[in-house]
Image (cartoon, rainbow over all chains, first blue to last red; front, top):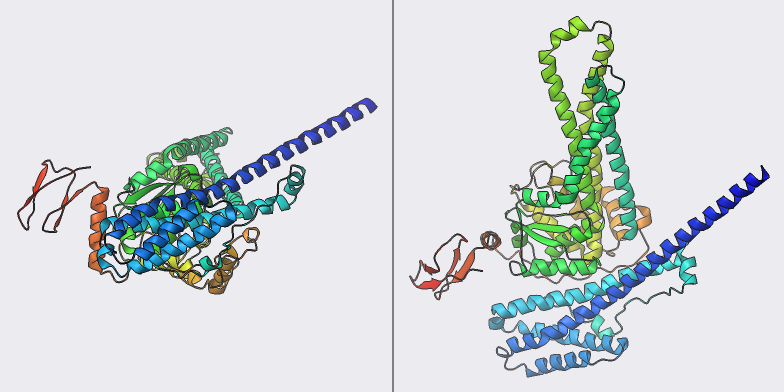
Length: 190
Length: 406
């Protein structure tokens, strides 16, 4: 009888350990998956910024013929683009991309004065691509923040916070627009 | 957002469980009646009911979305046919952090509407009508696509498929039983009265119960299904606002959809719950049989959201407008501040109805792979895909142009 009771007790303990191990592995894997999703969302922002850089030469080339007197606007865009492409570090890149956004919205305001350009099919399709790329940049930032929010919540909440602490899952920072100028940029309709 | 998925899954399981029990009981009762006293017959009936359901389930899981798309006459399109639609879908895919961009279809129908289908986010499709594309501006289209994207994220597309199949099985089995009862009662009335005098009484009671059950089961299952699908429309609206950060986009699109008086030709009773708004006009009042909440109410809730675009804000606005109990599950309401952005797209209201109608026509021709040839005099000729020649004469200036086919 005593032997039997001991055996059952032992089995229960082993069982509990196995269940706990399975849970820890499960939570750990989920956390790794979430962290990868955060990284993936971050790289989405870069993909869209890169797309904007690629788009600009084409846009400038198409518009130049119609806008002879706007050399300053084009120069501002081209310069902002090369500065954004050559930026080192997140802080500098953020500032440079903000300046590029600003230069592009100024350009779009000027376009309103050139009805002939606005009738050009090629330009219209470039304009739609630019509008969409600007949207994608801001939606990618928004999606990244959503992902970070979820990940941060997860590593602070019980029981996943224990595993997060054990394996050094650290909180991620939200994307915030540092450049005050970009925040106050006047909204224009493309 | 993720909490919502979890709760949605649980609700789906509960609903499917309830509908499944109805199906099993129906099988048991009908089996008992057909078996005429054989004690095993009830279980066999249950088995057959399960078999019918399994069969339909396998078909709908493997190719349900394709059947739905084909039944709605949706055509897969490329980026060139409508770049704005493709861009907007991709924008929403990025905002929603989906792994893959859904497949995009256009339905050749002038009535404005849209739906999403598929098993999971990886296999999802979004279909919109040509009428919708012509009527909405960019922000409004974004609202509609975001609504569909929310259905995909919330796994509503899978739920609609599963619940639809379950409902279909129940309706099918009841229908077969009621018809067979009707015909057999015509043929074998005499046999009953002479052969079975002893067990006849109990048999008749059983038959009456079975008939009642066969009539009530589909109604019950439908009510369950519709109640939950109404709720999911509100949740998808809330999700759309959170994705776009712009309630007015969806509100404006719903207003235009509500303003349209055209019935959808390509929708039917089975596919109706999938659309963003009920494709059948006319019935205004909401009753237990409505698949969608009243569209005017949805618009009022969206326009009442002035403080932010989070689920909390939608919930508050919902309660203020409808004075009903909460619609968004409490655990999905995480405290967050989500600012509403400003609108960007210019209004399309300046366009005349005539111009919109022409856009619908052009888009439908593009989807059907018409070739568009612009003559030197400025006239655009639309060449049907079955046109054999490689040259065409302009009806206005009589000049001959070459037809370039894609």
